[in-house]
Image 1 (cartoon, rainbow, N blue to C red):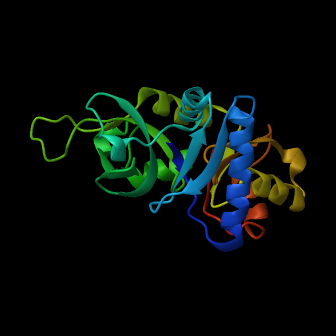
Image 2: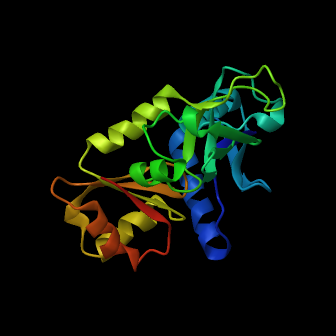
Length: 231
């Protein structure tokens, strides 16, 4: 079994559609290997994939590399190592990431420029449950532990978002639903692609000359989801 660093936090028909989509994504990742798999959701909403068959170790490694792996419940996090957690909340003190256990990243360890965590969220278009890489500092109860921090690769990714032509980030929608919404709103020509950030977190990459806030306003009535712009 491998627990992926992405969540399925919707309910009802939306959950069924999301898990059907997740099954197709797993098939794309490991379908050519000699394995069988079953996709499920843990009690904390993380997606887990039970994999069996001759190539099961390879398949688990492929899925962990593609999606990130939640390991906290399997033996804990090690100081100085890089992991993936989902952005669960933020306040003036910093970010709280869920990596199977709660990880706190102080505001001065975000490394994303000046401003409060809320301002960072707005500036980089961050949405709740976004998978983010971090370096674990150690147990917060250990007086000798370093603070956890966002990984350098994560900071680079977010700064790269700002160097482009703009984005609209979305949560609570699959990639297919997001694409269909853009098409329904008549803005297919205004985007380059929809980049998958997680199972239910997407990034609409704007075409040159597209105004991200304008695109958000145009599609907002079609998609009941949290959305933020990167400009």
